[in-house]
Length: 283
Image (tube, rainbow, N blue to C red; front, side):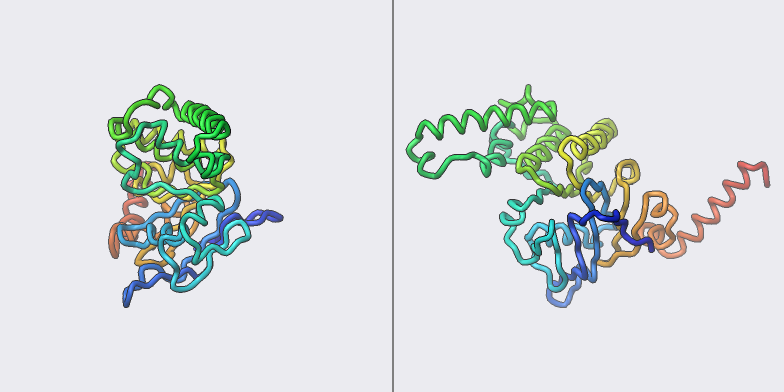
């Protein structure tokens, strides 16, 4: 198994060591390790039930680890509440879109911006001039932000009425409005058609560079994972079975067997040799 990459002189943004989560007698994740450096764009993959979303839930404080530690930007965050972790700079999206479906596109993003509103509760209750000023600034910032995601013309629409791909973009925009350093994407391409998937891949690259983010994504569409991720961690039955570049992962026998079953790696290798022989004009 390849080791996680590190850059000399660069402090990791996220370090996970020995992370374990048990639900009664079931161990969902065991001895999980991961290192992310600033500006990484990495993938976390594995068959259904491998423990990927459980890892995301521990990083974001939804679950408290049974064992292990999570260090984010130098701060231990295992055991913190989700809102505290979000305020430190970690945001996420979900496999099933979790917008506020009855609110407008504008208000979905404004809600995320309110942690940076700049006025007190008293200002809000009394509707002071400071409240009016800050609310106006908040709306303007939200509109500028929507334009980055080509959603400015949709700002007055109810979120549930957007096409599926635009709902995904809105969810990512809302997550980024919290100004995170680390963005966790849980199956962002789920339910997308091929054209929407290509657009999403471009968007993920764009937001990584535009907002100087570190991104970790869970995804079942291998086209997305292999097309945009720089390194990939593979899980099976709650444990890491491989770490490496997309090319290394594609040829890893343990990964092939985790997805296709025992013996599939040998069949895949035999097929590859046969195909190569045919290309060289051999029988």
